[in-house]
Length: 125
Ligand SMILES: [Mg+2]
Image (cartoon, rainbow, N blue to C red; front, side, top):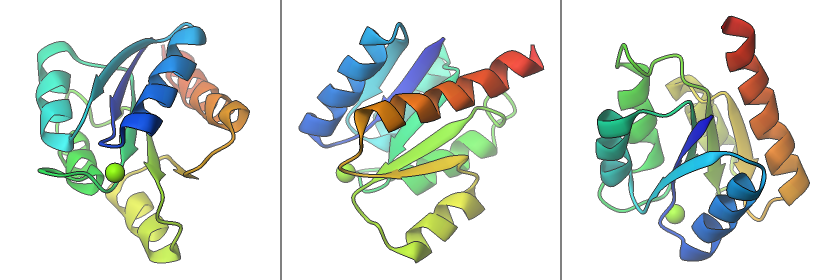
């Protein structure tokens, strides 16, 4: 199970990589949406964990591209952001986010949410 991670914040990106790796996931992490999109096209992924505020291409635009690409449109996506405002969350769900977590987050809750998304994939197989 491979997780695409896009976050420009070094601290959070490192934390997410560490949590996912320790939980047994393969991780492909990038520092902005553009690089993450290129990486996804090159090697694919099963789940996306996307920060919203990123340089070059933000998480909303990356998610929009994922949802309009036949190969990735059903990929579960968890949005990660420091912006706790309701309109961001609504925009996230409108764009096709499956879940939403505000930083800083509880690490156990983060992994529990990832497992929920993973179960959804496994059910379809
Ligand atoms: Mg950011």
